[in-house]
Length: 305
Image 1 (cartoon, helix red, strand yellow):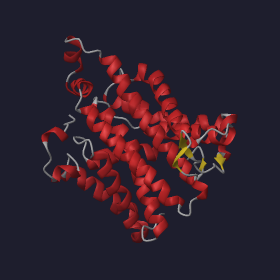
Image 2: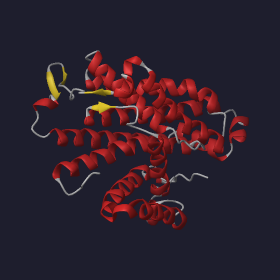
Image 3: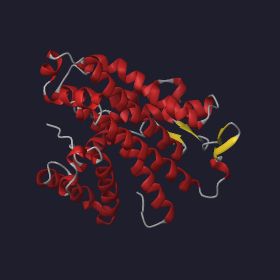
Image 4: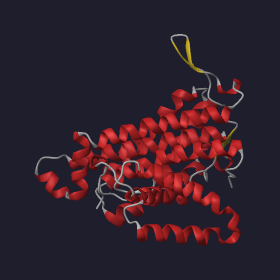
C-alpha cells in the first residue's frame, strides 16, 4: 500500500491518479451514450501488454508504443463493440465485466505474453527528439525519474480531459447525448446510432489502453493480474463518485477514492468496511457525485439518466 507521506510515494500516487482518471474518463464516455461499462480493465491490461511486447521484444520506442497500444485497443473494441453495443443496461454491463477476465486468461495462455510469468524489466522511456531537437530526454539519464513520469501523466491527463470537454460540446457530442436519452427517436431522425456507439466505445478503449500502457511502463512490468475485475469496477466507481453528469467527474472521483483508500490504511482490518460504507453513503447522499456540491456553468454539465 502506498504511503503518501514520502516524496517518492507522493509523486507515484499523483501519477497513478492521473493515469487511472484517464482510463476512467473512457468509462464516463460510455455512460454518456447510455451504456454501463465494467470492462475497462481489459483494455488497460491489453495496452500494458502491447507496450511491454513492443519495447522488450521489438525495441520500439516508448513514445511510439503508447499510441500504438491505444490504437490496438481501439481496433479490438470496434470488433467487439459491433455486436455487444446492441445490448443495453445490465446485459451490456455483464458482457463487459466478462471481458476483463477474458483478457486475463488470454494473457496467461499466449506465448508472446510469457503466460503467468508476465513481462518484466521493461526499459524506461528513451529520448524523444524532433529534427534533432531533444523534446524529452532519456529517462534513464534523469536523476528524478518519478518526477518525469509525473509530468508526463499530468500533461496527458490535461490534454485528455480538454479533449473530452471539447468532444461533448461538439456536434458529435450532442448526437452521442441523444443516444442516452432515446435511441429510437435519434435513429428516426437520421442519426446513425451504430456508428456513434462504436466511435464512443473505441475512444473509451483507446483511453483505457494508453492509461494502462503508461502505468505498466512506470512499474516496468506487467502480469495477467496487473488489471483485474476489481480494477474495472473501480474505474466505474471513480465515475459514480465524481459525478456522471460532469466531464471532470472521473478525475475528482479517482482522486477521492485513491487518496481515501490510502488514508484509511491505518484502520487495519476495518479499512474495507469503512471504505465501503463511505462509498455507499456518498452514492445515497450525493447521487450526482461530488461535483454536484459546487455550482458549475451549465455548459460543463451533462446529465446521465
